[in-house]
Image 1 (spheres, one colour):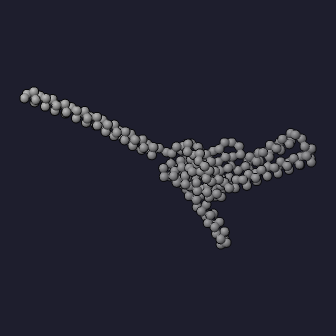
Image 2 (cartoon, helix red, strand yellow; image 1 turned 135 degrees about the vertical axis):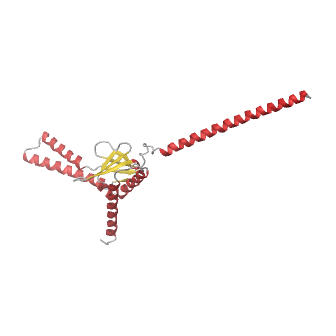
Image 3 (cartoon, one colour; image 1 turned 180 degrees about the horizontal axis):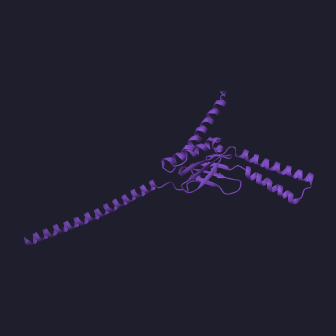
Length: 226
């Protein structure tokens, strides 16, 4: 009888230890899954709190300056007219000399560089400006930190983003191209929502009012009411 009781107690202790081991294994798995879920949630929160990837400004062109080709031809014609006029006058007065011809050519090239318009394009979250010479300048419109307008004989709108990049453009490019303005305005709204754009809201509002007024005038003129 005593041996039977000993076996029963031994079996009970063995069963209890086995159950404890099972609980430990399940608890370890549940704890590891809980830690993994917590790590995934933390990584998700970090991804949500980080700003967009700065490499994502290479999307397709959605808007461009429609007057750029016309302005480029005007600059070419002006430079060619200056060069031909100076060469003809020089040849008629003194006879054409290579040194003077090179000087007039350099003057015509300088005039073209001054008159050549910058090609402005925009896409989803970016705006770029490229001149006849030099590299392209590009900003993230959805990461803008400031918008500054420089007044004078040649007004300029200066855009700066959180990555330290900047673009200068003529405000007339935006007023003459509603699609360009739409891309810039959409990106600026995102910058304001993210708390990045702290300087330039007034300049953008004035520009928006001017563009809306110009659009209304064009509609009225097309309808024959003006």
